[in-house]
Amino acid sequence: MARVSVVRVKNDNVEAAVREAIEMAGDFDIGSGEKILIKPNLCCDKPSGSGVVTNMSVVAAVVKVVREMGAKPLVGDIPIVGFDPQHVYDALGVKEIVEKAGGEFIDLSKEERIVIQIPNARKLRRVKIVKTTFEVDGIISVPVLKTHFFTGVTLSIKNLKGLTDQDQRTRIHVLGLNTPIVDLLQVLRNQIRYVIIDGTYVARQIKPSGPYYGPTEPKDITKLDLIIAGRDPVAVDAVGAQIMGFNPKDIAMLREAAERGLGEIENIEIVGEMPGAVGKFETTLLGKIMRFLNKFWTSRIFNPLVHPLAKKLFGPEIVAYRQVMKEMETGKKGEVVLTGECDGCGICVRSCKVGNIKLVNNKPVIGDKCIKCFICVEACPKGALSIVGL
Ligand code: SF4
Ligand code: SF4
Image 1 (cartoon, rainbow, N blue to C red):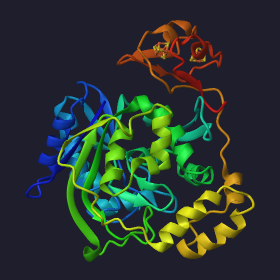
Image 2 (image 1 turned 120 degrees about the vertical axis):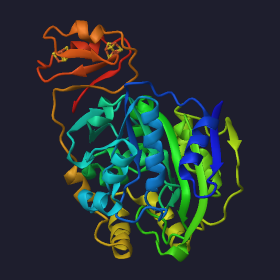
Image 3 (image 1 turned 30 degrees about the vertical axis):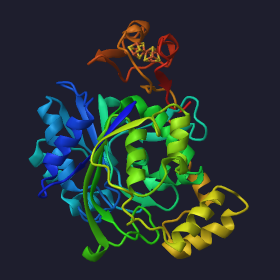
């Protein structure tokens, strides 16, 4: 059974609430010397506490907790397409906040990308993603509690999309969003150590509810003062969805993730304070229309109808299906990367006759002298290695 904590922030002490939430949910298994990537939602240049991006107080608190465990906290995210990453980082002051808390901010928009295969993917068979994702020992997803007009909710699972290259986002959209995001979760599932949802402030009455369309004027922001935490991303998102008034089974992404064995949406022990549906996440008529239209988003027949409407409503950021197809990247072939569960057996190290693999912290680190024999991929008893761009 998955355990999820729901904790109220008291006297504006966000850090105390984050600590309490972790303690109550338990299983915060971070080892000394590990590198942990803390992944907030820095989707756009809306202010901290707007309910659109993760509250910087929550990010700082997570950095402190990870540091106290003796691990190295790294913080990073790539904003959505159309936003200049540097502008977003500067607007939030994230680098300074993270450093002050004892962590390191990394500009993921400038980090090396790799193209990985997703074994058994239903739609997203390969994806261009920041290499750091697989170089760290684990990821803590720290999303903000909010709704989304296509997927219903956008929480820790959808937050993972921020680790993909910006040019992948539209591709994930045209593939239908829900299933490709679950494909992404599948390949990252073993990297996710923990989830902490920032429910301190919520963008009320988002019209339509989307990543950056929410009103951020003080009168439109509700101070909800909640932190939701746990080890299982599907379970934590299910509780977040419930708090926003959804039945988790009605959220396609969560339903599919549970069906594919990536987490729980039913078998959950909620500890702490579980408020009823807050009733502040109303879906507007426009939001309902957009969710309906999303069913046709990937259709070549309907796209010419949906796209101009979406463009008119939301602006030129919405990209046409045909254009997206053209933009699909071609992977750089011939690299090997760790994508699955690794038990540190070292077989791949021994299988590489050119000495291109080392074990660091019990995980393979692949060097740059690869002769592309792929014996390591074949040899790994766990099937944890993939060929990039194949
Ligand atoms: S593909 Fe071959 S050369 Fe490259 S890392 Fe694996 S075993 Fe070594
Ligand atoms: S062979 Fe596979 S399981 Fe063993 S260390 Fe290498 S990647 Fe990990």
